[in-house]
Amino acid sequence: MNRQPIGVFDSGVGGLTVLKQLVLRMPRERLVYLGDTARLPYGTKSKETVLKYSMKNASFLLEKGVKCLVVACNTASSLALDELRKNFDMPVIGVIQPGAKKAASASRVRRIGVIGTLATVRSKAYEEAIESYGSDIEVTSVPCPLFVALAEEGWVEDEVTRRVAERYLRSLKDKGIDVLVLGCTHYPLLKPVLSQVMGKDVALVDSAEEAANEVASLLREKGLAAEEDGSREMCAPTVCLTDRSLHFLELGENILGLPLNEVEYVDLG
Amino acid sequence: MNRQPIGVFDSGVGGLTVLKQLVLRMPRERLVYLGDTARLPYGTKSKETVLKYSMKNASFLLEKGVKCLVVACNTASSLALDELRKNFDMPVIGVIQPGAKKAASASRVRRIGVIGTLATVRSKAYEEAIESYGSDIEVTSVPCPLFVALAEEGWVEDEVTRRVAERYLRSLKDKGIDVLVLGCTHYPLLKPVLSQVMGKDVALVDSAEEAANEVASLLREKGLAAEEDGSREMCAPTVCLTDRSLHFLELGENILGLPLNEVEYVDLG
Image 1: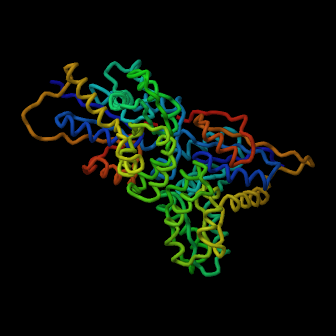
Image 2: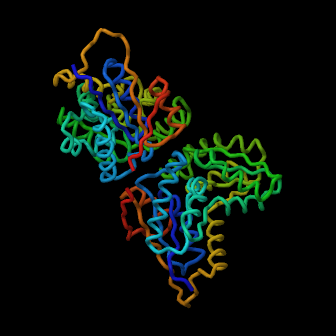
């Protein structure tokens, strides 16, 4: 039994889709979430800058006494995972590898599409991870910069969003993919439109779910899981944000499905 | 004659619309531009955070020996102008007051619309500034969060952008305004669509142009203008960015209409 918390960070609220899966999968684990709302988004920024912010976030969570680190952001997972593993002596789990593994096992036609931020797509992290699970797989990646703004605007089942999705996803449909990886933590919010545009024969892979499974397995393997104590009570996650933003609190409660009453605001510079 | 440079800052590249107007209006002035690309956007962030970043930007420009400070960002002008004026002993010019003055003088029906980021609209800075020029004027403000993403995606004359604009601007059309203030430095990029949606009887006020005129008048009044030296050469502005982002360089060159060959990268923490 290990009662230390699991540390989770993202550039903002998108990573709450991962936090939610962690809560559902491991209701007895204590969770500390850091959303770097003062410096979001990461998806348009350089590797150097995303690395710098990720190191600061990880140091903050380390001070909170976490037993492992979940990088609940596709951009930071793409650009900063190796460096975090080098610098922090604890398990570091990103969202790319779990999503890639699931996608590779789900594709029959061996053609997979990946959508994400500019930075994630440029990094080719998903291509490399998917190819490590099957060198016969053809991966096509498309950046979809407007999706985050549309999800945050709440236009999730909407004619405008459908048109934007049709434009972004056209080349992936033409490729005849059978699996689409939602390579940004905001994108699961747009699942209804994405399903509609891609059609029922294309499976959508949500890295958040896969990452939560990966974290659960890893904690069990390493003997770091919080032991079942017979109680049925779910631990409410501790949420820390670097900026006080009403809009994001509202959005966050929608994503998490829990009230965000007790948010701690922290200044990381 | 004063050969010190004019300092200009924005959260990113949007402020280049202001820089461009300053170059056109005062070709002999030296200009130093700081784009805080590592921490953009400001428009979704809290007053406290925008204030902190604005102070850091202004301090950086002060070290560059500037003679005045142009806040080429509507959000920072809304939230940080008073504090900057208190803390820096030099003229500080924002984009709100010049845009508000122009709008008030241009409106015959005394109903003005303002569009901007969430933070700018929440601040009510335009309402207050416009009302100071005419207490009979009714101001209606609408946040348009997707416009920045659409402008940055380059979808400037586009069916999707037209639909988004129709949705955002509907309430302003219903109000019967005759002046629309483009209260975000990105929005002038969308002028064709905005004109089309609002119709030819609604004048669009671009705060960038008005701010450049204001800076020119102020420098002349205070004896701070660079004297005409008879040369016809235009000074190329010095551009500093806090993050190295290829996408923004491309966009920046489009906005400025000049190549951004010599960009200095600076780390403001």
